Image (cartoon, rainbow, N blue to C red; front, side, top):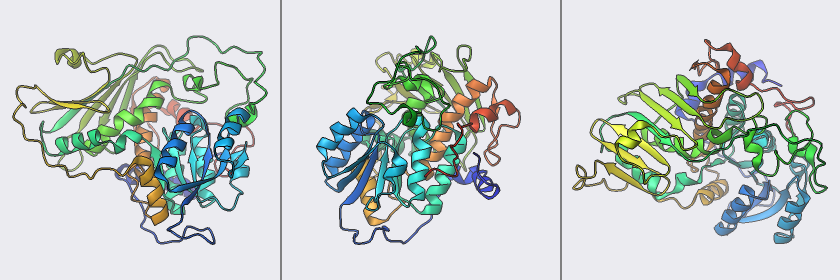
Length: 439
Protein backbone atom coordinates (compact mmCIF):
# COMPACT_ATOMS: atom_id res chain seq x y z
CA UNK A 1 0.00 0.00 0.00
CA UNK A 2 2.92 2.35 0.72
CA UNK A 3 6.29 2.65 -1.01
CA UNK A 4 9.12 0.38 -0.01
CA UNK A 5 11.88 2.00 2.14
CA UNK A 6 14.16 2.88 -0.76
CA UNK A 7 11.31 4.49 -2.67
CA UNK A 8 10.15 6.32 0.45
CA UNK A 9 13.61 7.84 0.77
CA UNK A 10 13.32 9.08 -2.80
CA UNK A 11 9.82 10.44 -2.20
CA UNK A 12 11.06 12.48 0.75
CA UNK A 13 13.29 14.54 -1.50
CA UNK A 14 10.68 17.27 -1.79
CA UNK A 15 13.29 19.89 -2.50
CA UNK A 16 14.18 18.12 -5.74
CA UNK A 17 10.56 18.18 -6.81
CA UNK A 18 10.22 21.79 -5.75
CA UNK A 19 12.96 22.96 -8.09
CA UNK A 20 12.09 20.51 -10.86
CA UNK A 21 14.24 17.83 -12.35
CA UNK A 22 14.46 15.71 -15.44
CA UNK A 23 17.18 13.30 -16.39
CA UNK A 24 18.47 13.76 -19.92
CA UNK A 25 18.17 10.48 -21.73
CA UNK A 26 18.69 8.68 -25.01
CA UNK A 27 16.56 5.73 -25.80
CA UNK A 28 14.34 4.35 -28.51
CA UNK A 29 10.57 4.38 -28.28
CA UNK A 30 10.64 0.76 -27.27
CA UNK A 31 8.33 -0.61 -29.94
CA UNK A 32 9.87 -2.74 -32.67
CA UNK A 33 9.19 -1.61 -36.20
CA UNK A 34 8.56 2.07 -35.39
CA UNK A 35 10.71 5.09 -36.14
CA UNK A 36 10.77 8.55 -34.63
CA UNK A 37 9.18 9.87 -37.84
CA UNK A 38 6.09 7.68 -37.50
CA UNK A 39 2.86 8.86 -35.95
CA UNK A 40 2.52 8.20 -32.23
CA UNK A 41 0.37 5.19 -31.31
CA UNK A 42 -1.89 6.50 -28.53
CA UNK A 43 -4.24 4.77 -26.10
CA UNK A 44 -6.91 6.75 -24.24
CA UNK A 45 -8.25 5.93 -20.78
CA UNK A 46 -11.54 7.77 -20.28
CA UNK A 47 -12.99 8.77 -23.65
CA UNK A 48 -15.83 11.16 -22.71
CA UNK A 49 -16.00 14.67 -21.21
CA UNK A 50 -12.37 15.80 -20.78
CA UNK A 51 -11.23 12.65 -22.54
CA UNK A 52 -13.33 13.54 -25.57
CA UNK A 53 -11.89 17.07 -25.66
CA UNK A 54 -8.37 15.68 -25.41
CA UNK A 55 -9.08 13.30 -28.27
CA UNK A 56 -10.14 16.27 -30.43
CA UNK A 57 -6.91 18.09 -29.58
CA UNK A 58 -4.82 15.04 -30.44
CA UNK A 59 -6.67 14.59 -33.73
CA UNK A 60 -5.87 18.22 -34.56
CA UNK A 61 -2.14 17.52 -34.32
CA UNK A 62 -2.41 15.02 -37.21
CA UNK A 63 0.45 13.19 -35.51
CA UNK A 64 -1.25 10.27 -33.76
CA UNK A 65 -2.89 6.92 -34.41
CA UNK A 66 -5.49 5.84 -31.87
CA UNK A 67 -4.76 2.16 -31.30
CA UNK A 68 -6.65 1.52 -28.03
CA UNK A 69 -9.62 3.05 -26.21
CA UNK A 70 -10.65 2.31 -22.64
CA UNK A 71 -13.73 3.37 -20.69
CA UNK A 72 -15.84 1.87 -17.92
CA UNK A 73 -19.01 3.07 -19.66
CA UNK A 74 -19.91 0.91 -22.66
CA UNK A 75 -21.94 3.71 -24.29
CA UNK A 76 -18.98 6.06 -24.21
CA UNK A 77 -16.72 3.32 -25.46
CA UNK A 78 -19.02 2.37 -28.33
CA UNK A 79 -19.29 5.99 -29.43
CA UNK A 80 -15.52 6.50 -29.46
CA UNK A 81 -15.02 3.12 -31.11
CA UNK A 82 -17.18 4.18 -34.04
CA UNK A 83 -14.97 7.25 -34.50
CA UNK A 84 -11.81 5.14 -34.48
CA UNK A 85 -12.83 1.67 -35.74
CA UNK A 86 -9.24 0.40 -35.93
CA UNK A 87 -8.65 0.98 -32.21
CA UNK A 88 -9.12 -1.96 -29.84
CA UNK A 89 -11.54 -1.31 -26.98
CA UNK A 90 -11.31 -2.18 -23.28
CA UNK A 91 -13.10 -1.57 -20.00
CA UNK A 92 -10.00 -2.18 -17.85
CA UNK A 93 -6.85 -0.11 -18.49
CA UNK A 94 -4.72 -2.87 -16.96
CA UNK A 95 -5.76 -5.25 -19.71
CA UNK A 96 -5.34 -2.52 -22.31
CA UNK A 97 -1.69 -2.03 -21.33
CA UNK A 98 -0.96 -5.60 -22.40
CA UNK A 99 -1.42 -4.44 -26.01
CA UNK A 100 2.05 -4.32 -27.56
CA UNK A 101 1.75 -1.51 -30.11
CA UNK A 102 0.90 1.30 -27.64
CA UNK A 103 3.53 4.06 -27.47
CA UNK A 104 1.76 6.54 -25.21
CA UNK A 105 -1.32 6.81 -23.00
CA UNK A 106 -3.67 9.73 -22.39
CA UNK A 107 -5.52 9.51 -19.04
CA UNK A 108 -8.75 11.40 -18.41
CA UNK A 109 -10.44 9.43 -15.65
CA UNK A 110 -11.84 10.68 -12.35
CA UNK A 111 -9.09 12.04 -10.08
CA UNK A 112 -8.92 9.02 -7.78
CA UNK A 113 -7.73 6.81 -10.66
CA UNK A 114 -5.15 9.22 -12.13
CA UNK A 115 -2.12 7.91 -10.24
CA UNK A 116 -3.05 4.27 -10.74
CA UNK A 117 -3.50 4.43 -14.49
CA UNK A 118 -0.45 6.70 -14.81
CA UNK A 119 1.82 4.44 -12.77
CA UNK A 120 0.65 1.37 -14.67
CA UNK A 121 1.38 3.07 -17.99
CA UNK A 122 4.80 4.38 -16.90
CA UNK A 123 5.82 0.98 -15.58
CA UNK A 124 4.71 -0.58 -18.86
CA UNK A 125 7.17 1.74 -20.64
CA UNK A 126 4.62 4.18 -22.06
CA UNK A 127 4.74 7.98 -22.26
CA UNK A 128 1.84 9.64 -20.43
CA UNK A 129 -0.46 12.64 -20.67
CA UNK A 130 -2.67 12.90 -17.56
CA UNK A 131 -5.41 15.38 -16.79
CA UNK A 132 -5.11 17.66 -13.77
CA UNK A 133 -4.75 17.32 -10.86
CA UNK A 134 -2.01 14.81 -11.48
CA UNK A 135 -3.03 12.63 -8.52
CA UNK A 136 -5.43 12.31 -5.60
CA UNK A 137 -2.84 12.45 -2.78
CA UNK A 138 0.58 13.89 -2.03
CA UNK A 139 2.12 10.44 -1.69
CA UNK A 140 0.80 9.58 -5.14
CA UNK A 141 2.28 12.80 -6.58
CA UNK A 142 5.75 11.96 -5.33
CA UNK A 143 5.58 8.39 -6.59
CA UNK A 144 4.29 9.38 -10.03
CA UNK A 145 7.02 12.01 -10.53
CA UNK A 146 9.68 9.61 -9.28
CA UNK A 147 8.48 6.81 -11.56
CA UNK A 148 8.37 9.07 -14.62
CA UNK A 149 12.00 10.06 -14.00
CA UNK A 150 13.16 6.52 -13.31
CA UNK A 151 11.41 5.16 -16.39
CA UNK A 152 12.62 8.11 -18.51
CA UNK A 153 9.17 8.78 -19.94
CA UNK A 154 7.82 11.84 -21.74
CA UNK A 155 4.98 13.34 -19.70
CA UNK A 156 2.50 16.22 -19.67
CA UNK A 157 -0.26 17.25 -17.25
CA UNK A 158 -3.45 18.71 -18.70
CA UNK A 159 -3.02 22.37 -17.79
CA UNK A 160 -3.88 23.59 -21.25
CA UNK A 161 -3.91 27.31 -20.35
CA UNK A 162 -0.14 27.09 -19.79
CA UNK A 163 0.24 27.03 -23.56
CA UNK A 164 -1.68 30.26 -24.09
CA UNK A 165 -0.03 33.56 -25.00
CA UNK A 166 -1.62 35.43 -22.08
CA UNK A 167 0.17 33.48 -19.36
CA UNK A 168 3.47 33.92 -21.22
CA UNK A 169 3.09 37.70 -21.37
CA UNK A 170 2.24 37.87 -17.66
CA UNK A 171 5.31 35.82 -16.76
CA UNK A 172 7.48 38.19 -18.79
CA UNK A 173 5.99 41.27 -17.14
CA UNK A 174 6.43 39.94 -13.62
CA UNK A 175 9.96 38.71 -14.25
CA UNK A 176 10.88 42.01 -15.95
CA UNK A 177 9.95 43.80 -12.72
CA UNK A 178 6.98 45.73 -14.17
CA UNK A 179 5.31 45.96 -10.76
CA UNK A 180 8.44 45.47 -8.66
CA UNK A 181 9.06 42.63 -6.20
CA UNK A 182 5.92 40.58 -5.51
CA UNK A 183 5.24 39.38 -1.97
CA UNK A 184 1.50 38.81 -2.20
CA UNK A 185 -0.86 37.06 -4.65
CA UNK A 186 -4.63 36.61 -4.50
CA UNK A 187 -6.61 34.17 -6.62
CA UNK A 188 -10.39 34.42 -6.77
CA UNK A 189 -12.81 32.33 -8.85
CA UNK A 190 -16.55 31.76 -9.03
CA UNK A 191 -16.54 27.98 -9.48
CA UNK A 192 -17.96 25.80 -6.72
CA UNK A 193 -18.06 22.00 -6.41
CA UNK A 194 -19.77 20.94 -3.19
CA UNK A 195 -22.37 18.58 -1.76
CA UNK A 196 -25.07 19.45 0.77
CA UNK A 197 -26.64 16.09 1.60
CA UNK A 198 -25.85 12.37 1.64
CA UNK A 199 -25.77 10.47 -1.62
CA UNK A 200 -28.92 8.73 -2.80
CA UNK A 201 -28.56 4.99 -2.35
CA UNK A 202 -30.47 1.86 -3.32
CA UNK A 203 -30.21 2.67 -7.01
CA UNK A 204 -28.88 0.12 -9.47
CA UNK A 205 -26.04 1.31 -11.70
CA UNK A 206 -26.99 1.66 -15.36
CA UNK A 207 -26.32 -1.56 -17.31
CA UNK A 208 -23.67 0.12 -19.45
CA UNK A 209 -21.55 1.12 -16.43
CA UNK A 210 -18.89 -1.17 -14.94
CA UNK A 211 -19.23 0.31 -11.45
CA UNK A 212 -16.55 -1.78 -9.76
CA UNK A 213 -13.98 -0.73 -12.36
CA UNK A 214 -15.00 2.91 -12.00
CA UNK A 215 -14.42 2.70 -8.22
CA UNK A 216 -10.95 1.30 -8.77
CA UNK A 217 -8.90 1.81 -5.57
CA UNK A 218 -11.69 3.65 -3.71
CA UNK A 219 -13.55 1.93 -0.89
CA UNK A 220 -16.34 -0.33 -2.11
CA UNK A 221 -19.73 1.39 -1.99
CA UNK A 222 -23.07 1.21 -3.81
CA UNK A 223 -23.58 3.21 -6.98
CA UNK A 224 -25.29 6.58 -6.67
CA UNK A 225 -26.29 9.13 -9.34
CA UNK A 226 -24.82 11.68 -6.92
CA UNK A 227 -21.38 10.22 -7.70
CA UNK A 228 -21.63 9.72 -11.43
CA UNK A 229 -21.64 11.06 -14.05
CA UNK A 230 -19.30 14.00 -13.49
CA UNK A 231 -20.44 15.08 -9.99
CA UNK A 232 -17.77 12.88 -8.41
CA UNK A 233 -15.72 16.06 -7.80
CA UNK A 234 -17.99 16.79 -4.83
CA UNK A 235 -16.73 13.78 -2.88
CA UNK A 236 -13.41 13.31 -1.06
CA UNK A 237 -13.29 9.67 -2.15
CA UNK A 238 -13.04 10.68 -5.80
CA UNK A 239 -12.03 14.35 -6.05
CA UNK A 240 -10.92 17.44 -4.13
CA UNK A 241 -13.77 19.88 -4.73
CA UNK A 242 -13.25 23.26 -6.37
CA UNK A 243 -9.59 23.61 -5.41
CA UNK A 244 -8.78 20.22 -6.92
CA UNK A 245 -10.67 21.07 -10.10
CA UNK A 246 -9.34 24.58 -10.74
CA UNK A 247 -6.23 25.01 -8.57
CA UNK A 248 -3.72 23.64 -11.07
CA UNK A 249 -4.93 26.12 -13.71
CA UNK A 250 -4.85 29.25 -11.56
CA UNK A 251 -1.91 28.55 -9.23
CA UNK A 252 0.10 27.61 -12.32
CA UNK A 253 0.57 31.27 -13.28
CA UNK A 254 2.11 32.56 -10.01
CA UNK A 255 4.17 29.37 -9.72
CA UNK A 256 5.61 30.02 -13.18
CA UNK A 257 6.00 33.79 -12.91
CA UNK A 258 7.45 33.84 -9.37
CA UNK A 259 9.39 30.57 -9.63
CA UNK A 260 7.58 29.14 -6.61
CA UNK A 261 8.56 25.77 -5.24
CA UNK A 262 6.61 24.12 -2.43
CA UNK A 263 4.93 26.08 0.38
CA UNK A 264 6.20 25.93 3.96
CA UNK A 265 2.91 26.87 5.65
CA UNK A 266 -0.67 26.18 4.58
CA UNK A 267 -3.83 27.30 6.40
CA UNK A 268 -7.43 26.88 5.22
CA UNK A 269 -10.78 28.43 6.09
CA UNK A 270 -14.18 27.04 5.23
CA UNK A 271 -17.41 25.61 6.64
CA UNK A 272 -17.24 22.73 9.13
CA UNK A 273 -15.39 19.75 7.68
CA UNK A 274 -17.49 16.81 6.50
CA UNK A 275 -15.89 13.40 6.24
CA UNK A 276 -17.56 12.52 2.93
CA UNK A 277 -18.16 15.63 0.87
CA UNK A 278 -16.22 18.70 -0.21
CA UNK A 279 -17.00 22.16 1.22
CA UNK A 280 -19.16 24.92 -0.19
CA UNK A 281 -16.14 27.21 -0.30
CA UNK A 282 -12.48 27.39 0.66
CA UNK A 283 -10.04 30.18 1.44
CA UNK A 284 -6.50 28.82 1.58
CA UNK A 285 -3.42 30.75 2.71
CA UNK A 286 -0.05 29.52 1.38
CA UNK A 287 3.37 30.82 2.41
CA UNK A 288 6.33 30.27 0.11
CA UNK A 289 9.95 30.93 1.14
CA UNK A 290 12.42 33.26 -0.56
CA UNK A 291 14.00 31.92 -3.77
CA UNK A 292 17.44 33.44 -4.32
CA UNK A 293 16.89 37.19 -4.73
CA UNK A 294 13.09 36.75 -4.84
CA UNK A 295 11.22 37.58 -1.60
CA UNK A 296 8.88 35.25 0.30
CA UNK A 297 5.34 35.13 -1.09
CA UNK A 298 1.93 34.84 0.56
CA UNK A 299 -0.64 33.41 -1.84
CA UNK A 300 -4.32 33.25 -0.96
CA UNK A 301 -6.93 31.17 -2.79
CA UNK A 302 -10.63 32.21 -2.74
CA UNK A 303 -13.31 30.15 -4.51
CA UNK A 304 -17.12 29.97 -4.82
CA UNK A 305 -17.38 33.71 -5.51
CA UNK A 306 -15.45 34.90 -2.46
CA UNK A 307 -13.03 37.71 -3.18
CA UNK A 308 -10.24 39.45 -1.27
CA UNK A 309 -10.97 42.95 0.00
CA UNK A 310 -8.18 44.35 -2.17
CA UNK A 311 -10.16 43.30 -5.26
CA UNK A 312 -12.95 45.64 -4.19
CA UNK A 313 -10.50 48.42 -3.36
CA UNK A 314 -9.06 48.17 -6.87
CA UNK A 315 -12.57 48.04 -8.39
CA UNK A 316 -12.04 44.74 -10.14
CA UNK A 317 -15.75 43.94 -10.50
CA UNK A 318 -15.41 43.21 -14.21
CA UNK A 319 -12.92 40.42 -13.44
CA UNK A 320 -15.10 37.39 -12.75
CA UNK A 321 -12.03 35.26 -12.02
CA UNK A 322 -8.62 36.70 -11.32
CA UNK A 323 -5.00 36.20 -10.33
CA UNK A 324 -3.87 39.42 -8.64
CA UNK A 325 -0.15 40.05 -8.18
CA UNK A 326 0.59 42.71 -5.56
CA UNK A 327 3.94 44.38 -6.25
CA UNK A 328 5.85 47.19 -4.64
CA UNK A 329 5.28 49.39 -7.71
CA UNK A 330 1.75 48.39 -8.67
CA UNK A 331 -0.55 45.50 -9.46
CA UNK A 332 -1.08 42.99 -12.24
CA UNK A 333 -4.44 41.26 -12.68
CA UNK A 334 -4.92 38.31 -15.04
CA UNK A 335 -7.36 35.59 -15.97
CA UNK A 336 -6.97 32.93 -18.65
CA UNK A 337 -7.12 35.29 -21.61
CA UNK A 338 -6.48 38.85 -20.46
CA UNK A 339 -4.28 40.86 -18.13
CA UNK A 340 -3.84 44.48 -17.02
CA UNK A 341 -1.32 46.58 -15.14
CA UNK A 342 -2.82 48.74 -12.39
CA UNK A 343 -3.35 51.59 -11.70
CA UNK A 344 -4.06 52.12 -15.38
CA UNK A 345 -3.01 55.78 -15.41
CA UNK A 346 0.36 54.92 -13.88
CA UNK A 347 1.11 52.32 -16.57
CA UNK A 348 -0.48 54.00 -19.60
CA UNK A 349 2.95 54.78 -21.06
CA UNK A 350 4.67 51.63 -19.86
CA UNK A 351 6.66 49.87 -22.55
CA UNK A 352 6.10 46.14 -22.18
CA UNK A 353 9.15 43.91 -22.64
CA UNK A 354 9.70 42.16 -25.92
CA UNK A 355 8.37 38.58 -25.81
CA UNK A 356 11.03 36.13 -24.69
CA UNK A 357 8.93 33.00 -24.12
CA UNK A 358 8.30 31.37 -27.53
CA UNK A 359 4.77 30.85 -28.74
CA UNK A 360 3.59 27.33 -27.95
CA UNK A 361 3.08 24.88 -30.78
CA UNK A 362 0.09 23.67 -28.75
CA UNK A 363 -0.23 21.94 -25.40
CA UNK A 364 -1.00 18.51 -26.85
CA UNK A 365 1.35 18.95 -29.79
CA UNK A 366 4.19 19.68 -27.34
CA UNK A 367 3.64 16.28 -25.78
CA UNK A 368 3.23 14.35 -29.03
CA UNK A 369 6.27 15.99 -30.60
CA UNK A 370 8.33 15.33 -27.48
CA UNK A 371 7.29 11.68 -27.50
CA UNK A 372 8.39 11.30 -31.12
CA UNK A 373 11.65 13.18 -30.53
CA UNK A 374 12.33 11.48 -27.18
CA UNK A 375 12.67 14.84 -25.39
CA UNK A 376 11.20 14.68 -21.84
CA UNK A 377 12.04 18.35 -21.21
CA UNK A 378 10.03 19.70 -24.12
CA UNK A 379 6.53 19.53 -22.54
CA UNK A 380 6.44 22.55 -20.20
CA UNK A 381 3.99 20.84 -17.84
CA UNK A 382 5.94 17.59 -17.56
CA UNK A 383 5.62 15.78 -14.26
CA UNK A 384 8.69 17.42 -12.72
CA UNK A 385 6.78 20.73 -13.00
CA UNK A 386 3.27 19.33 -12.54
CA UNK A 387 4.21 17.34 -9.43
CA UNK A 388 4.99 20.32 -7.14
CA UNK A 389 2.06 22.25 -8.64
CA UNK A 390 -0.35 19.42 -7.84
CA UNK A 391 1.20 18.95 -4.40
CA UNK A 392 0.62 22.62 -3.61
CA UNK A 393 -3.03 22.31 -4.61
CA UNK A 394 -3.58 19.13 -2.59
CA UNK A 395 -1.94 20.60 0.51
CA UNK A 396 -4.75 23.16 0.61
CA UNK A 397 -7.39 20.46 0.97
CA UNK A 398 -5.20 18.57 3.45
CA UNK A 399 -4.90 21.67 5.68
CA UNK A 400 -8.66 22.15 5.55
CA UNK A 401 -9.45 18.53 6.43
CA UNK A 402 -6.76 18.40 9.13
CA UNK A 403 -8.28 21.49 10.75
CA UNK A 404 -4.91 23.06 11.49
CA UNK A 405 -2.21 25.11 9.82
CA UNK A 406 0.38 22.81 8.29
CA UNK A 407 4.06 23.51 8.82
CA UNK A 408 5.16 21.60 5.74
CA UNK A 409 8.39 19.62 5.78
CA UNK A 410 8.77 18.79 2.11
CA UNK A 411 11.83 16.59 2.60
CA UNK A 412 10.03 14.36 5.10
CA UNK A 413 6.67 14.68 3.28
CA UNK A 414 4.85 15.45 6.53
CA UNK A 415 3.59 18.24 8.75
CA UNK A 416 5.30 17.61 12.12
CA UNK A 417 2.92 19.96 13.94
CA UNK A 418 -0.21 18.24 12.59
CA UNK A 419 0.12 14.44 12.64
CA UNK A 420 -3.59 14.09 11.83
CA UNK A 421 -2.80 15.35 8.34
CA UNK A 422 -1.01 12.11 7.50
CA UNK A 423 -4.33 10.34 6.86
CA UNK A 424 -4.95 12.75 3.97
CA UNK A 425 -1.38 12.77 2.65
CA UNK A 426 -1.19 8.98 2.36
CA UNK A 427 -4.53 7.42 1.51
CA UNK A 428 -5.84 3.98 2.33
CA UNK A 429 -7.11 1.84 -0.54
CA UNK A 430 -9.46 -1.08 -0.72
CA UNK A 431 -8.15 -4.61 -0.50
CA UNK A 432 -6.27 -5.83 -3.53
CA UNK A 433 -5.09 -2.36 -4.60
CA UNK A 434 -1.44 -1.42 -4.07
CA UNK A 435 0.52 1.52 -5.46
CA UNK A 436 3.42 -0.89 -5.95
CA UNK A 437 1.35 -3.22 -8.13
CA UNK A 438 -0.67 -1.15 -10.56
CA UNK A 439 -0.77 -3.52 -13.52
